[in-house]
Amino acid sequence: MIVSTKELFAHAYGRYAVGAYNINNLEQLMGLFRGNLDSQAPFIIQISKGAREYTDKRLLEAMIKEADRIFSDAIFAVHLDHGDEASCLDCIKSGFYSSVMIDASDQEFKNNVAITSRVVKAAHKKGIAVEAELGRLGGVEEHISVKESDSRLTDPNDAKKFVALTGCDSLACAIGTSHGAYKFNGSQSLHFEVITEIQKILPGYPLVMHGSSSVPAEEVSRINAAGGELVGAKGVDEKQFKQAAKLGVTKINIDTDGRLVWTRVHREYFKNYPKEFDLRKPGKIFMTEYAKYIVHKNSMLGSAGWLKSLKQYLGKRKTKTI
Ligand code: G3H
Ligand code: 13P
Ligand code: ZN
Image (tube, rainbow, N blue to C red; front, side, top):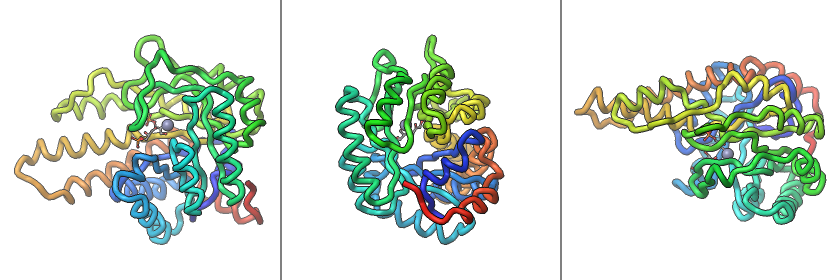
C-alpha cells in the first residue's frame, strides 16, 4: 500500500526512523520489497533525478505499481530524491509520488525559500508532501559534487524561519554526513548537538538525514579483494541511527550501501566464475543479499517490526493530512 510520508512520519516520530532506499532497477526493487517484508518494516522508495533518466521514469513507476500489487502487505511511500524545481513539478503532475524533495540547498537562503515555496504550493494543491534542504552536505551525487570546504551545517534558527516561510513538511538537515562512499575524512563527524537544537526549536517536526550509508568495512574489503579499488571508504556509524530517531530524525537516506552490495556480488561472482555470462545468476544472488542487507539496516534504524502497528494506526485515521 502506497501511503503519504506524512502518515509514516507521524507514526515513526521519536520512536524509529524510516529507511529511505534509492532504486534504479528491477533487482533492487525485488530485494527492497523482500527485505522490508522479511523485517516487517515500513519504508520509502526513493527515485532520484538520475534514476528517472537512467532508463525511462515510466518504467520505474510501473514496476513500483506492480510490486505494490504483488507484495500487498508492504506499506511504503514513493519519493523523488534531490529534485530540482522542474523534476518536482513533473512528479507532482504525475500524481504517483507521495512526496518530492526540492533541493535548492546550493542557493542563498532567500532563493531557497522562494523556490521551495513554489514547489510546496504546487504539491499541497495535490496532497503531496515536500521535503526541503537547508545547509549543505558534502560529497558526490550524479549531478553535483560539493567540496568539504563548501559544505555547511544547518543553522537551527534558520531552520525554524525556513519551515515557517516555506511550509515544507520535512527538512533535510546537514549535520556532518556527506553523500557517497568517502565520508568523514579528517576531522568530520556527526553533529548531534545540531539536531538536538533543531528538535528543541521545532518540536514534533520530522527531520531527514541524508548521506547515511554506513559503508561497511567488510563490504569494502570484499570488493577490493575481488578487484575493486575503494581506498579510504568510510561511512556513518549505524549505531547512531536510533539516537538520531529519538531526536526527531524520521527518514534516513541510504543509497551507497546498496550500490556496494551490488558491486561486491557482481565482482565476486565474475571473479569466481570467469567463464560465466548469465546475468541472472549474479542477479539472483544480489536480490537475496540486498534483502538481507535491508533486514539488517531496518534493525539498526529501529523500523523493523512496526508494520502491524502502522497498519492499525492507518486504519484508525480517516483522512490524509497535508
Ligand atoms: O543523494 C543522492 C543519491 O545517492 C542519488 O544518487 O543522483 O546518482 O541517483 P544519483
Ligand atoms: P549515501 O550516499 O550515504 O547512501 O546517501 C544517500 C542519500 O542521501 C540519498 O539522498
Ligand atoms: Zn541525499
